[in-house]
Image (cartoon, rainbow, N blue to C red; front, side):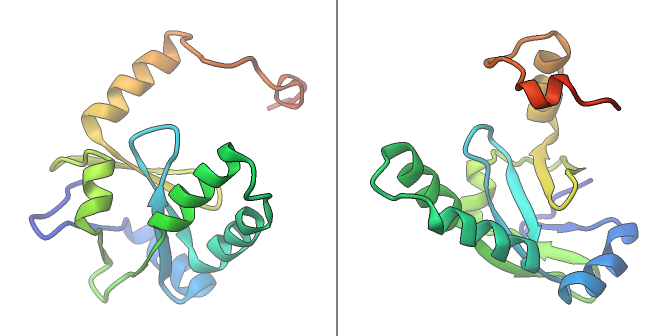
Length: 143
């Protein structure tokens, strides 16, 4: 997938019709607080996430940091008639997006990565490099 010179990507056709149904092509893009990528939510899903984030106690420094980053960078975007979305320059810079990008479906959201950074992270993850223990609920999950 390519990022054009104006900072637009074309969403895959298989997602466009569904996005029209569930959110009238209204999306919200924000940053990931742990990796250099962008998170793209249908507006209705973002509103649920935003409400949960805002309900967290803002006196906790970690919580406040996440509130500042996620809500502070949240940007409304709309899928145009050609299936494109325009990403602001600050968001593109944060995610270090080059010409080639990768859009990853993650359930109720997408992640948008620079292709090179995605390959590097995939290599680390496949090599078993993790920075945390597996949560018990995940260990018990049967796929």
